[in-house]
Every structure is written in structure tokens, then in C-alpha cells.
Amino acid sequence: MEKSPKIASKVQVTVIPTAFAMAAGNFAEATATIRNLGQTVEQFLISIEGLNPDWYDLTVSSVALFPNDEEVLKLVIHPIKTTEFKAGSYPFQLVVVSQENPNEKVNVDLALEVKAVPEPKLDITPQRIIGRKGEYKIIASNPGEETIVLQLDAVDDEAVLRYDLQPKLLTIPGGSSLESNLKAKLAWIDFFIRERVCDFQILATLTGIDAVKTVSGQLVIVPWYKSLPRLRLPHIKLPWLKRRPTIISFKATSEDRRKFKLTWSVEQAREVKLDGKDIDPQGEREINPTETESYVLTASNKYGNASQTVDVYPIPAVTEKASDLVRVSISPAELEVSAGGVPAIATLEVQNFGKIVDRFSMEIQGIAESWYSRSASTIALMPQATNQVQISFHPPKIKGVKSGVYDFAVAVRSQVVPGESAIVTGRLKVSPSVEFAMNVTPVRVSCRRKGNFRVIVANRGVSDLDLVIEASDYEEGLRFRIKNMGPLIAAWETIEVPVVAKPKRSSVVGQTKRYDITIAARTPDGNSQSVHCEMYHRPLIGSWRPIRVIIILVVIVFVLHYVAGLGGGWSELIKNPMEWFYAAIRHVRGWFS
Image 1: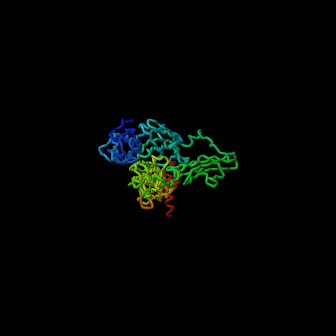
Image 2: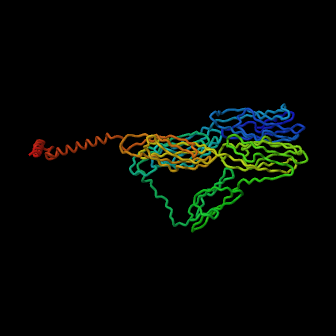
Image 3: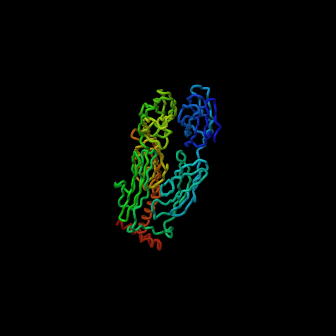
């Protein structure tokens, strides 16, 4: 939507669009066109009023314009979800005022509509299946208007089922639904199993928001012999069949076009090479190219060859450039800043060495536009005059931003003499930041032998995370096995670590025992977090009482059998009780004679 231009006697301001609607965590852009209607060179100050400063980025805070000249600015709106966040309408203004005459002022009314967090719907069909395995459809619906991303997972309290969920990640447009296929079956072969009811849950996590939706399903496992008519011979791959090697995947990914990750997967290959060097059939490698390069993956066996090429296009290296018309310097040339923290300020000094009045524009290269703002995008200078521009570096703390050193360049271009420019370089260091969140699923497990847990660790910092994961219980009655006790988690990545808990003394008889478990993760610098879960160990026999009754009955039967034998046995006792009695008396008297 475009609003009619706001005009003062010396300045005209047009903003497109003037209304924004989005959910927290998203962003939108607007362009503001500022025109100098006066007869002299004017410096205009630009600001935003009525909106949280953390919710927007304004590329410049001032601009110098020749008469009847205009400048186009970019305004980025990005509401942040915090504990104080509320959905609703937020009116605000873009204010442009003349530095020389503050009465020359234009206010442009803008409106921001922040939508509520989407509430996806989750369903499973069928909800209950009877058999040795089950196939279900998970239906996820997005009743909202914004696109959402759901991460699906399947769990059960006793960890007795094995799941195959495809796909696990659903990107659902507003007003649409998507399906995921789930296959569930018993995690082991049990020849003695009777009918068993297994309840499980589907967890749908909304990415970027700590919100989880669940839906329950049920698999009723029948005895193995009832499934015999449905048995089929498995498909057997004969090793002597001639098959050429297959490159399943080979790709290069990057979030900042500085560091790239090569990943590959090859099947049926005897020899695999990357740029002529032997590698494993599956793997990954980090590369830091400085210019466009091609990487070749080749696979071979005695039946043939296969190859694939991937090209990477890194950000071009920045270099300094001098000019006879303008001299440029930046101080300091090396800065350090924390992502999402206090900005680092550099001063750019520009001097006009020409013989006429010139206007110079400034462009920052090598880093994203959301990482910086300038006090002015253009300045007008008399011959031999000098002016300064403040550059604020403030990389946001969002996914894709990583700690490290980033080279940048500032190009100052003459608008009177096209093609004439000077370039000065600098270096920005984004400081490491450790921040992570962890969770455990399931929270409660009931088992006879061992309990299986999964610890989910999400790295929410800008640097790689080196963790040590430990598990303990209050009574020290459990023995733990952690698959990966010291994981290295890349920035903004999430991993799962399996944890198995087993009693140190496993009893066959006894009551159900509860163990309170604490799983802790700590970094080398002492930053730590912990989560809690429970395990209920159920012995095979819940009490000694049945065993005591059985022992007493056995003793009684033995005594009765012995006494019956004193008079000739059970048959004599039944046929002639008196004869049995006298025979027993004679047998007892014989002990003492």
C-alpha cells in the first residue's frame, strides 16, 4: 500500500509500504524516498518514533541532498518475540527533519500489525492398529496465514517400539495441510509375546518457538503366529549382479558464503576420490575457498565409473583502492562486537581533493546489510573540505550469524565524476558466545531391564559448542551409557544424544522402584544446564508373597506324601483306611525297637 507523499516546504517523503503485518520472528522491508525541494544543499536527519528500537533497522540516520535530488533508504521491520511480547497493532512514525532548520519536519504515519503465534493442528489416522506393525498418516494443518515449519518425532514411555517417520520436517503454508507417513513396529523379536497394547505419541515442535503439539496413537501387537500368513520372503540383493557405482548426493552448503561444507554419499563403489584424494563413501568436509572453485567427486568399481562436479562461489575478497579526487580513511580499522550486543562504532573520514563541489555516496561491502548502519549514506563536500560519517556495526543474533573474523570494505564514490571511487578496508570480529538449551524425552520411562532416553541439545549461540554430558541419579543405583559424551555442536545446530540407564543390581522379585535422574551438560568454561527425568524399574515378580505360598504348599505336599507312605501309600489309605493306620503304627514302632 502506498500513501500520499508527505511534503514540507523543503522536503518530500514517500514510504512504500506504510502498513506491515507479520508474526514475531519474521521481517519486512520498506523503502523511503526523501527529496530535497529547497534551493540549497540540505542535510536531513532521519529517525523512527513510537517503535521499540530492537524491532527495526534503519540503514542511515542522515542524508545530504543537492537541490531537487532524492535518496532512497531501506527500513527493515523485525519484531522480536520476548516474554513481554504481545500481538496487536503498533502505530509509529518515520520522522525527517532539516538539520539547519528544525521547523522543516515531516512525519509519516506507519502501522505494524504483529500476529499471534500460529497454532498448528495435529491428527493421526488410523488412531489404533492391530498387528505386528502399523502404518499411520500424520496430518498437520496450519490454520494461520504465515508459513510454519514443524519438526516431527515419535516416542513411547517404555521405548519398546521402533519408528520410521518420513518426512520429519514439514513446511506448511498458511491455510494448508501436509502429511507424514509413520511406520511403527516392535523394537525386538519376541517369540513368547501375547497381545500387547503400546501407546505412543507424535511430538510436533514449532521451529523458532518453544511450542510442542502432541497426538496419541496405539499399536496392539498380536502373537507372532497370527502373522504367519502375511510373511513374505525378503528381497535379497545378489552380490554377483553387475552394478555401477552410484553417487547418491554431492553438494556444497554455506550460510555466509565464506565457509562451505561439502557432503557426499556413494554406494556400490570400491574406490571414492575427491579431487584425486581417497575418501570414505560417506562423509563431509569444511572448505574455505577465496575464489570460485570446482570440486570433483569420482567413484569406481570393476563395472564402471561415476563422477559429479560441484561449483562454489564465495564472496569476493575485498581490496583497497586509492583515488586522486577523494581521500578516505577509517578508524579504527579493526573492531570487535558481540552478536546482538552493544554496537561497535567506526569513524569514516572523507576529504574532497577535487576542484568543484562534489557529492559522495558510501557503500559497505563484504558483510550483510543488517549488520551495520550509517549516520549518512551521502555527503556533499566543498573542495578540500573534510567530513566524517559514523558507521555502527551490530550483527544480529539470528540463525546464520557465526563468530569469526569478517573482512569488509567501504567504497566512497563520486556522483559528479562517474567511475571515480576510493575503497578502504577493515576487519570486524564477532566474539564467541556460548548459549544452549537442552531437553530430554521421554520424561518418564517404565521398564524391566533398562530405560532409553534421548537428550536434545540446541546450540543457540554464534560459536561452535563443545559439551560434556553426564548423567546421575540421587541414590547412585543406576549405571549409565551415553553414546556421545563429548559432542561438538555447530552454531545454531541441534543434536540428539541417546542415554541408556540400567540398575546396578537388577532383582527378579520386588516392588517397582523409582529413580530420579539428572542429566547435565557443561562447557569447558563452566557454563552448565541440567534436565530431570524418571525411570520406574519393574521386576519380573512384583512381591515375595506368591513365592512364599508356593514354598509352603510344596512342604505340605511333601509331608503328606511322606506320611501316606508310612502305611503303604495313597492307594492303601483310600481302599482300607484302618489297615493303613495299623501299618503306619507298626512302621513307627519299628523306629524304636
